[in-house]
Length: 207
Image (cartoon, rainbow, N blue to C red; front, side):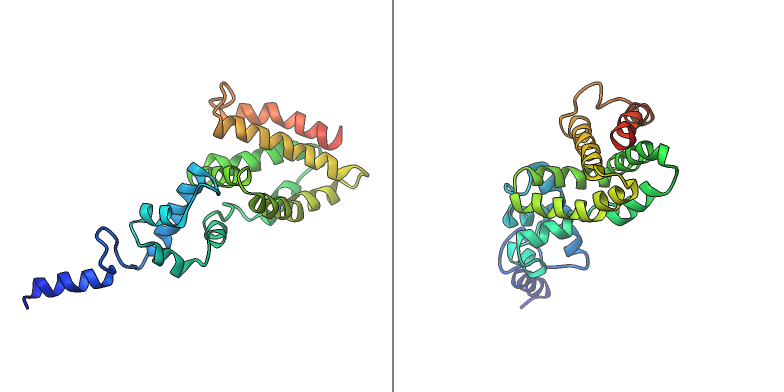
């Protein structure tokens, strides 16, 4: 057997005999996560499949299962929120009470403005509306790590409602600007958008 034939045989064996599918490499897990993140961002949770992610990553579906037990686990790994929610809460609360609305708008929109952050957040939003389980996970996590500590800091009887109204307002802005791309909200510069949002959010919180 010639060396080239031996190499072809080894490659076929490593790829389980499937043309176009390569075996795992040093960054295979990372490539699978990138492919999954793109699929969740473009299609949402329900329409994303392990096989589809495998095709996008150029690997066999069995290799995806080797790294991730289920689509749920793949989603959790791929959609890690770009900023630790606990850090978000800390940044929001670090400053004068009368500037709380501006800090919230600045921190929230800042996450969306980076390319990686926007892709991850789009994936989360689209998956939330197509999967009750994803919605539950996100709702519980955001409530525990962001809404609850900010509500405690307000120290007023209806604090939870006030902070929830802020969250509702920001979700609407994010949908309009980054997913629906509603003009002129989509193309308004960030500083102007924050200037317009800050007093409205402040009114929800302390008005």
